Length: 246
Image (cartoon, rainbow, N blue to C red):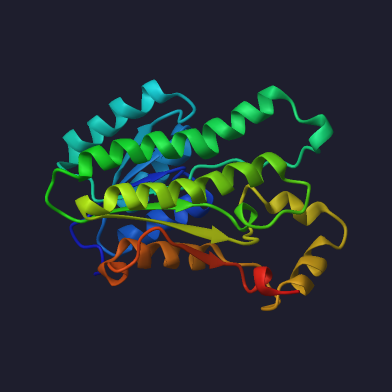
């Protein structure tokens, strides 16, 4: 098993891509700490993975440090962090409020920094390689004018990935990101209610279908494994060819 004996933290692990990553890592031998605000669903995933659930509202910095310390106390080490928690937003520029701006920045960007900071501080002294994997988005590189706050936060995640990668490399900690395209998750399935959306989006994607959550989880598994030991500061695009289609 590719992650035998590794301790992995998955933020936003109660549903969607985060849940799929937690299940995939557990199948490959990792022991999983699920961080989420959703207690009921988070506990279900922890049970499925044989791991442990930790309630954490990632919007608030003062809740992140104690949770990471609890995980370190419970598991004895932290080897992998996947920053998967995130929110989307389609409010038009002229209607964006300060509350929306703050919410997405707190969840999508601020939490990634402070969770990564804690992981870095705990990984660097344990004598083992560390892995930080950020779930960014295709929207961190491409824009359609309808996801302005989301675009900005995911572009920030990519910049943060590069910065952490340079800073952490001396401590044998690799920091990479994944940029999914359109993945059908609980956060995106509302699009199916839009007339002709599914046909349109599949026609726009060269592979002719939406990306599967397992495909994103497989990319995360690669980045978490020793097979990616030569990579840091990079991002893997998993989008069925969307970003290369003129």
